Length: 80
Image 1: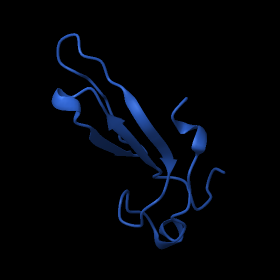
Image 2: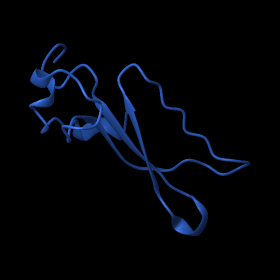
Image 3: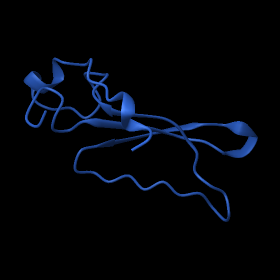
């Protein structure tokens, strides 16, 4: 919940698909830093997977209390 070990500075992980030759690209954004996904021309962004939470103690560095829990994951993040 708000103020818990998963917040703030939660990690957003988005995979950008539909790149040439089927390449995928991983995009990350920390809380308070918006992430804009765009493709050139008429290409579209395909989100293959998304996570709201913390799965790493290095990305979106925060105070030690927040970094201790790296098992934060919102399974419903992709449909959101």
